[in-house]
Length: 170
Image 1 (cartoon, rainbow, N blue to C red):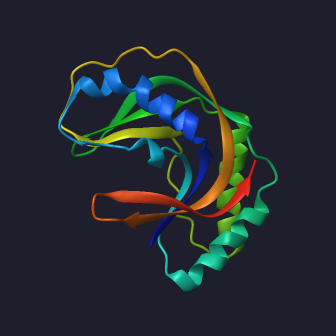
Image 2: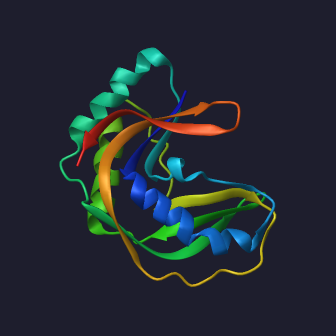
């Protein structure tokens, strides 16, 4: 199972983001768009982990001393790999940076190898997009954080579903 640490938001916030992003999705061709139920803010991606290793990764949550109460989104943006990855740009803050450092340091303390990449806080809207015709402006959106979770990515036939394996409720 592929696992990662993420901040979760409540269902009404997820639905709100999906509605807000509908015009931007309409300006894209091709690709696969994230369902509202899968919206989250990844803090650290870990990768493939066996079931019997999950408890070790759960321990990392004990290294966290501070959680943000909210996150701010202020623009649409994209990464370019083979194709576009469209996302909501999350305003980085000192508390998000501290949380990222605490999780990464917890992983190092428990003996995991440092494989952490540059952190670009975002909520993915779509992947494998062929063309982005225009990037619309986005008014600032503030969302309440529901939890910090160790998440698992499971393929359920119609695509990936992200599930909270362990979480700290805010």
